[in-house]
Length: 266
Image 1 (cartoon, rainbow, N blue to C red):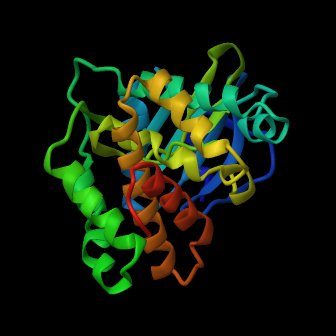
Image 2: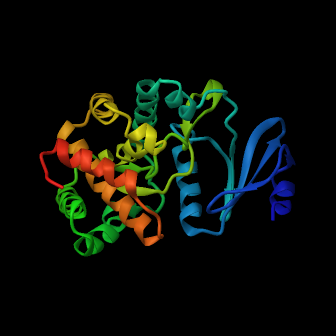
Image 3: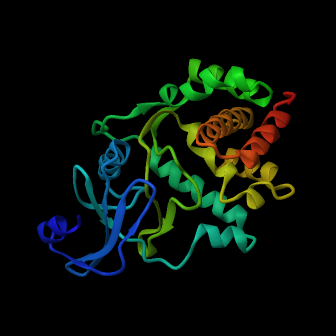
C-alpha cells in the first residue's frame, strides 16, 4: 500500500512498518529528511491530515505532502517523552508543555480552515445516553448542555490532546500529531489530559487538583469553566467506552473528582 507514495514523493523506507487503530505507518526519508508516511481510509483521519497541513507546522508536526488517504509528515526525532516525564515525577512540566502546544494550535489563522466537526455533534452520544446510565452521567450531560449552549473562545480544536499525541521534535520543539479536527470552545482541548497518560497517573493523590491549578493558569481559563469541561469530557469518554464494551473506571473517577470540585454530588 505504500509503494505508490514511496515513488511519487521520492521516499526511502527507514524502519519497520506498523499499524495504528485507524491507519498504517512506515518511517521514511525524503531527500535526507526523517519523515513518517501514514495511509488511512478513515474519513476522520483524512480530515485530520488536512488540518495538520493547515496548521503549517505551528504547534503541529510539519506536513511535507498529503493526498486523500496519504499523509507525509516530519518524524519526531527528539529523545524526550511526556510519558517518561510523568513517570519520572515531572507531571507539572509535562502539563505545561501540553498547555503550550494547545495554545499554539488555538492561535487565530487568517486562512480559512478545512471542514471541522462541531463539538455539539461529538457530545450527542453523552446527551442521548446519559439518562439510561444515571448517576454521575447525569451531571456530565447537564454540564455539557450548559457549556455547549453558550460557548466561549471558539477556536479550531485538536480534539485529542494527551501525552502520547504531543512529541519531541528536537529543534522544532514539542508538536502535536493525530488531530480529530473539531470546532468549539478552546477549553475542551485541555480536558483530556486529566484522564491521561494512564489511570495511576491521573488518579495519583493530589494530582487532579494540581493539574487544575496549572492548566487554569497556563491556559488562562477560569477554574470553574475548566472543571466543567473535564466533567463533560470524562462523561463523554466513559459513554464511548461503554459503547465499545470497555470498563470506563478511571475516566468516571476523574468525572467524580471534577463533580466534587464543582460541588455536585455523585
